[in-house]
Structure formats: C-alpha cells, structure tokens
Amino acid sequence: MTRVLVTGGAGFIGSHVVDALLSRGGEVRILDALHPAAHAAQPGYLDAAAEFVLGDVRDSDKVSAALEGVDDVCHQAAMVGLGTDIGDVADYVAHNDLGTAVLLRELARRRFAGRLVLASSMVVYGEGRYACGEHGLVRPAPRRESDLAAGRFEPPCPVCGASLEPRSIPEEAPSDPRNVYAATKLHQEHLAAAFSRETGVPVTALRYHNVYGPRMPRDTPYAGVASIFASALASGRAPRVFEDGGQLRDFVHVRDVARANVLALSAPQPVPGAFNVASGTPRSIGEMAAALHAASTAGAPAPLTTGAYRLGDVRHVFAGVELAARQLGFRAEEPFDAGMAEFAAAALRAPPA
Ligand code: UD1
Image 1 (tube, rainbow, N blue to C red):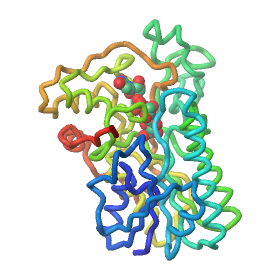
Image 2 (cartoon, rainbow, N blue to C red; image 1 turned 90 degrees about the vertical axis):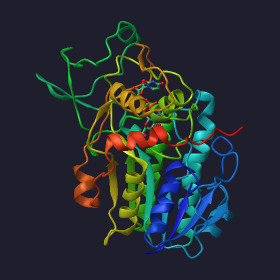
Image 3 (cartoon, rainbow, N blue to C red; image 1 turned 180 degrees about the vertical axis):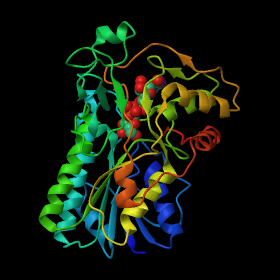
Image 4 (cartoon, rainbow, N blue to C red; image 1 turned 120 degrees about the horizontal axis):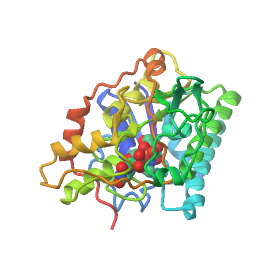
C-alpha cells in the first residue's frame, strides 16, 4: 500500500476513505480546510493514525507541501449539494474548479507519477435514461412547472408524448449538468482529463450516486435527501416526501464508496476513466423514507407524501454498475435495509454553530 494524500479527508466521504486506507495498512495524509459551512472544529472521528494538515486546496504552498512524499492522490475536497441559490456560484467555482486546478498544477510541477482519483457525481448526467416503446432511448426535456403542479411527475417522450420507462444510466451517457454543483463536478472531470492527457497520470473519476451513512452532515442546504429525512425523524418530525414518492435513486453506503476509492487507488493496474459508484438497486424516495422510518426509534410520525416539488429536480436517475464491476472489481456490499437501519441510529454530524 502506498502513501496517499486525501484532500477533504475530514469530510463525510473523505474520512471513510481515510479509514479504509488505514485499515489496509496504508499511510494517509489529510489536507482539509475544515470549511466553516461543514465543520465547527476538527471532527472527533478522525483517526490519529492519519497525518492531518489544515489547508485549502486553493493554496498552492499548502498543496505543494502536502504532496511531499505522496504516491497517490484522492481528491475529495469540494463544496457539495445544491446550495441555497445562485449567490453560492462563486464559492462553488472557487472551491471545486479552482481548487482542482491548483491541485493539478502542483501535481504537474512535481512531476507526479502516481494515480489521481477524483470524487465526481451522478449529477453530471442530469436526468436519468429513459426508453419510449416507440422511439427507443430518448432524452426528455426538463419537466414543466405546469406538469409538476398538476401532479404529472413523469417526463413524457419528447417525440410522441407517451410515457417512458426509466433505465439505468451508463457512463457513456451524455452529460447534462443542471445546477452549479453539477457544472463544477463535470468541469473537474474535464480539467482532470486534460491534465491526464498532458502528463500521462491516470485519473479515475468516481461518479457517486446518493451516498448515505454515518458522519453524513445534518440537514443543511448542502445535504441530500437521506440526511434531511434522518434529521426530521431524529427530531420527531415526519419526513416530507416530494412528488408522489415514486422518483428513483440509487442509495449507496459510504463504506462501499470508500471501498471503490481504495480499489481505484490500489488495483494492480491503474483504472482510468469515469465510473458509476452505486449499489445497482434503485429505490424510490418513498421506499427510502419508509425504511428509515421503520428503523427509527424516535417515535416520529410516518413519512408524508406531499406532492410538493422542486423545479430543478430530475425524476429518476440510477446507475448502470457493470463497468465499475468489470474494470474496477467494484460491487456494493452493504445491504439497503441494514444500511438504512444503521443510518437511522447513527448520529448525524451536527451543523456548525
Ligand atoms: C443528490 C445531491 C447531489 C449529489 C447526488 C449524488 C443535493 C441537493 N443533491 O442529488 O448534490 O451529487 O445526490 O449523491 O444534495 N426530496 C424529498 N424530500 C426532501 C428533499 C428531497 O422528497 O425533503 C426528494 C427530491 O425531490 C428528489 C430526491 O428526494 O426527488 C433526491 O433529492 P436530493 O437528495 O436532494 O437530490 P439528488 O437529485 O438525488
């Protein structure tokens, strides 16, 4: 096992990558800015066996020093989630795009010859994949507000208006980032690919689907639905399921995500390319809310399906997992019910004061 720099190693996913590397006997250095939107202090769950360096990935000197003696880099540092509104745009671009650019420049300066693993996201796809009985694979337009308001949640065939069947999304599907975060994740992939072409460094981009598990931050504008529902249940409130609850996602446990990172860093040969990291079993949001509620001991009321909607939401997106299985040897192992039960009982990370 090599010496690995994990940027964002104090965060939800990064810290699990750190633990997974340490448990395989790896040496780990963390570079993390402990961004005040994510951390009030250095989190207590950090393993002291990892070296901790406080620093921002946009700071060339910090990055250069953190790269000293490192064989491979796992780049998890990023601002995540949907954010509050377009006012967040400059922060997302600064942390995600510029942060990656500075890291790549320092890697190039140091003639880095290891592997680079990049945290990407299924948000680069936008809507999932759909098939029309008549027209085959089609790309539906963003859903219209008038349809959503009328409870017509399924996007229709853009050619004939017929109903569509959702299909799993493969890595070669066209990208269609629909929000600022998604645009920065895709840009990170593109920057890393350009870096790879110029330097020969193999880059593996892992497109995480809906990650959940211990240490997930509490309900904030930057959190995903699993954390929002768990936070509601923990405080005795019913999870509020939007639309009709039938929207499909792939919930993947954070320990599986960490293992995918370890595989990308340690496979006998580098595995360049982009890969879905997902469980392979889509679940509806209603089903996920019910599973969390069933496992919760807080006595909260059952999930409420509200018919409310968010205009930017996609209807279904879930992963084709064959490429990751074939090339990376990755298959998710954490069962959904056990994972959700553990998550319902786990302490969510408190928001910074
Ligand atoms: C989420 C993340 C995205 C991340 C991706 C993969 C957010 C906002 N989105 O995308 O950044 O890259 O997972 O990990 O963090 N919902 C409810 N009730 C709620 C909140 C949401 O029913 O209180 C529904 C939404 O309408 C949507 C689904 O849950 O249909 C998923 O929402 P969310 O987790 O926010 O966004 P994703 O699109 O899955």
